[in-house]
Every structure is written in structure tokens, then in C-alpha cells.
Image 1 (cartoon, rainbow, N blue to C red):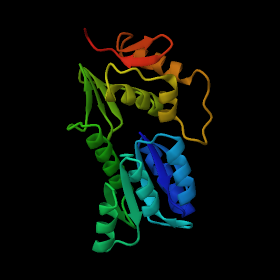
Image 2 (cartoon, helix red, strand yellow):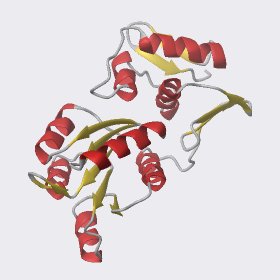
Image 3 (cartoon, helix red, strand yellow):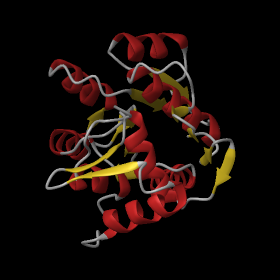
Image 4 (cartoon, helix red, strand yellow):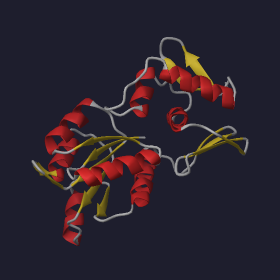
Length: 220
């Protein structure tokens, strides 16, 4: 899951980035409305964590621009203004959820997972495919009920493939899920993670579509 964090407090932003990364998310962070607008115009995110009070305006302005172009990316508002009218204003402006500061980091991660799950139309918190099951909350994978040890980035690749079995995911799409802006992408990293997953889950689980990318194999 790739998240855009819009927060101008450097201490809070660093803490959120570190905590959400440990929860298995890829986090890109900006500090202003202008940078948030540019990020949302140029990249795809699974969700946005948006502070209400920013140095160059209100997070609601970013939210309004997002919804005006019919972008349904889930948005959680963060703010110290936690009175009921403030929450109502944010939700009516198009926010999907609202957290008042201070808040629990684990709760924020859980709310993000729930928003993305609902946005994809899934009822279950688990991703399943045949005997394969992936738990985004626990960052765990099982095959035929037996645990399979995977790295954080192997988990991210498998998660993206399991979200839409049979749908081809390009190398570029997978790299976007794996790496934030500040991280260097090596030329063969996706291939390495796919190779590792095949070694752990079986070669038949992930199919290479030459010239296009990878997909989770669906039985004929």
C-alpha cells in the first residue's frame, strides 16, 4: 500500500513515516498544499493522510481539488481541531475518515487498511487465492495453513498481485508500490522478489507475461 502523507510538523511526519513503514506501507511525505497537489497530480497513491492546517493553506483545499477531478483516493484527515463541526466539515468536503491529534499510530494504520479494503470492494480483511492467504494487519502469509516467511518487500509484491488475481501488474506498477521517492530503485529488484516468492510458494503461483509484467495465475 502506497500512502501520501501531508504533514508540516517534521517530528510528527518522521514518526508517522517510520511507524507506517514498519506496518508494511510505502510512505511519501510532503509538507505543503502545493507539494501535495503536485504529488497527487503526478503519482498514484492508495490513500492520503492529510493534515488540516498547512503552511500555505488548508488541507481541505487539497481535498476539494482532489474530489473536483473525480479522484476517489481515500483520504484521512489529521487535525488538532477535533470539535464535531470540524469533523462534519471535513467529512462533507469528501474526506473518508478523520483522526484528531493526538492519535494512536496502530489505529491510523488499521483505518488505512480498512479504507483501502472497502475501496477495492473486499469484505474480508484477508487476501486469499486458493490455498494462499495474506494478512495485511499481521504482515503474514500462509500456504495451505502453513506460515511462509517473506520480507517486507516480498509481502508488498505478493499483496499487489493478490489484490487482483489474473490481472497483469507491470514492473513499473510494482516498483511504485515498493519504493518511495527517496529510495533508489535497482534495475532487477522486482525480478528478485518474484524469484524469491516462487521459491517459497511454488513456481506456478506467479506467472510472467513477457513484455508486460506479472500476474497471479488463475486456474483455467
